[in-house]
Amino acid sequence: MLARVAAVAVLLLSVAAVAAQTPVEASRALIARYHEDQANIDRARDLLEAALSKDRQVETMVMLSYVQFLWGDLRAKSDDDKLAAYDHGRQLGERAVELAPKNPEAHVWYAINTARYGQTRGIMRSLFLLPTVQREIDTILSLDPKNTRAQSLAGNVYMTLPGIVGGDAARAEDHFKKGLAIDPRFTVLRVDLARLYIATGRYAEARQELTRVLDERAPRIVADWTVRDVPRARGLLDSIKDKR
Image 1: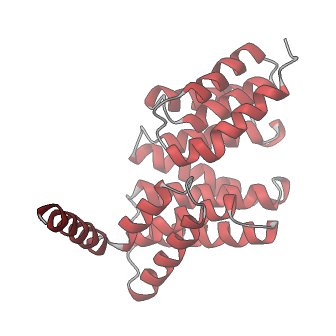
Image 2: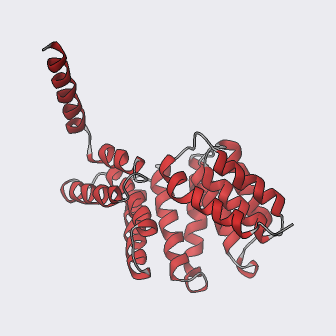
């Protein structure tokens, strides 16, 4: 009898805890487990959209901007769907930046969605967005010098752009390494550093970084590591298995 009462009490406390969560907190919990069920991204998006329709809080805008990025990357079925998701994400991020200019996360998701939108649309067709992305990176790092996402984004910008419009492998490597010095468990940085090494023919160094991704036992973002970083690391390792 006592065991049954205790079980009911635990259940009631769990329900109360869930009910006490804000939409942002509930969405963050869903996103943390998207590797278990990617439909969690849809659920988080719907929850945040509903919350935003009632009360346009900056925190909700920022979280939804992040979720739109994830939705575009992982749930969209076409480039048009991706563009719509990233565009909505950058609009939310831009509005959050207007309302809270000193919030680094608002700048992060405004910049990342803008960059992803441009990448999907086509880099040469989207160069007009580059000054915005670069300005936002500078702003993030001035507000939060240890922001690993800003270092990741900066590295990717310099790695992806053609040299004629600002691409620079050395600067990309510097940003990736700065990010890893801040957080060695932010595994996407290792994957991207490995991509840079592969592009420049440094296969042994690439293998080292990719192996560290696969061997990581406490990744900073478990869902990203599981769904994105491990498969990419395995694919890249396979692509250079005969390279010396």
